Length: 476
Image (cartoon, rainbow, N blue to C red; front, side, top):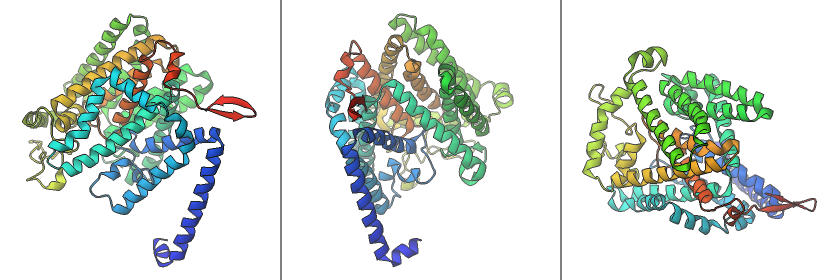
């Protein structure tokens, strides 16, 4: 097919002309139909969110090609970058009739974030400026620009959708990941199976297993709280647990217990005064972290015999002191975004090239700890800013929990706990990852919720876009 296209420019022109005609027809149709513009927006946003699912991103075609990391990866070809930018811009143009309305209050949302969570905004600024102190400023600035632009896209999602809608988006994302992962692991094992266990469409068995744990809990909660979807939800739960077990990660089983226990615990927290509720949630997270480390690192009988997990975390902790020494060499601001692990520069110039696991001579591609990787990139200052923003989001998530009666009331706290637990032995806390995406969405949404004193005032920041259907105004 490729040879045919190259040898026949006329075919290329015909395909291009057909594409332009379809594009113009769609543009005209969406401009005339606010209802379908709203539906198309959700589909387009979902398509953009799916490739960065998990911490490693989706590895199958075509989603790996539209992952924004391709915009700063050094091995990405110019045609790929041009095609990727064309895809993004085309989507924005098609949805321009809707964006004219939904973006009107975007600056108000940014103002809310600046006043409500200055730590979050300062962290943003630190990412954007980190190229000035990076050893590879061009690469770091390129990375920072991509991450910042996409972070504004995540802010848009957080401001545009309520928690009930965000919960629905999460269910759809997890559903597609579970189904596609089982398919590729079963029928295309060269893509979906790692020698140590399943990795599905997420590229690494540990991150895959963590995401299956989240998927199982999300759909189990939906089965409990939504009788109309119970049977369907139970099927998804069974599939997610099956995939989780095939992933061979003991830590993911611990994570499943932690997340489900948290949801039950939130029923007790909901009855407490806000300050005590905040302390209770923090204690739960701290205890969960301690128990997770204890189980996966020290109790060999539980880890090996019960959880069927090898003791790989010990190898990680062997090189963590070396990582901390590197952080302390640039303690305040770090090495810049993606400025530390740079094997493409060669061992002599790679800042992380000297970090080797002594027992196995393994050269790690990252710190196997999201908090340490963040400190490597943005120093102890960056880590402190992130943690202050994280605690602020927990506090506001607690306030939302006490005010809301919906099923999704505990969703912010569930996702924040998931982010913490999965970054203890893996990475992905910041940068172009699913963890960063959810953190930005959560931070935006909880700050908007906290910036008003009643649901009626909430419309200042998020007004539904209406469309006409049969002469009746409906929310879009």
